[in-house]
Length: 292
Image 1 (tube, rainbow, N blue to C red):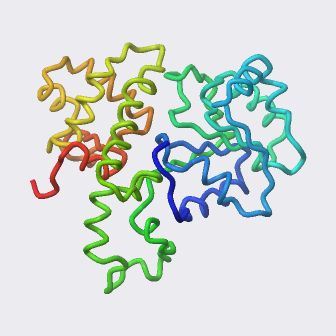
Image 2 (spheres, rainbow, N blue to C red; image 1 turned 90 degrees about the vertical axis):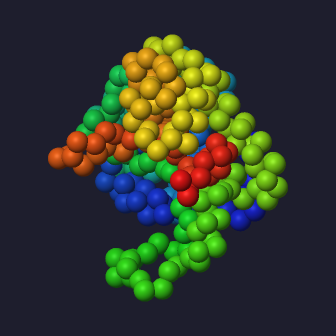
Image 3 (cartoon, helix red, strand yellow; image 1 turned 180 degrees about the horizontal axis):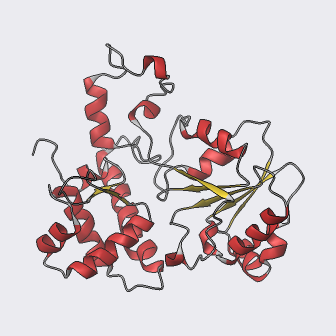
């Protein structure tokens, strides 16, 4: 929908995923929509790792899982990882997975993918505490877009930069969203980003039944985060002239979708938590400037 990468990139997260598969029964892979979660498990897992993949984006699969959660999670094969994409769409699966894992604590049984937090906001009450480990997927880093290998601890600090200033500035402009950063035509790229942001505001953010969300306010908040120096929730409230409690609710939803990230201040400081967009490439869409 938002363009395809001509040359698929390896992801640094794979090394961590392979470690987690060896010690945790359930791995939760979460991140914003279109950051490459499905591609990671479907195309980058080593061939020696066998898996069964099902996505709840398919209505027939979702309906069966909702009606028969216990049967659904047991429909697998020995020594295969059961990968469930968009797992948050059937909250009952988490209780059924807990039951399976409590019977057998073998590592690497399930990988659950989600573009929202697995929490009470999405009606998921079973957190799988003690049974699951989490892996967050972010947009491609600059090094990943350039097909560079992961730095080792020994060469982390280098005298010679791994990328040029030109490549760095290009990354600041284009970001690292798979399917977006590589679009050559500027108008097509802006339209693709607009589609992504509009879908976030008009569909994804309104799927949270426990809260009332204003799609227009979502867009205004994203614009404020992309253009203002102070992006604390109080500053956004003042800038948009909207009640701070309403702003906080909308920030919580955007955080649950991984569209924004909250950075807390240093523990002993008097600063306020700041919010940032998930990908630097969105700043260009909001006509922000790194020189301000």
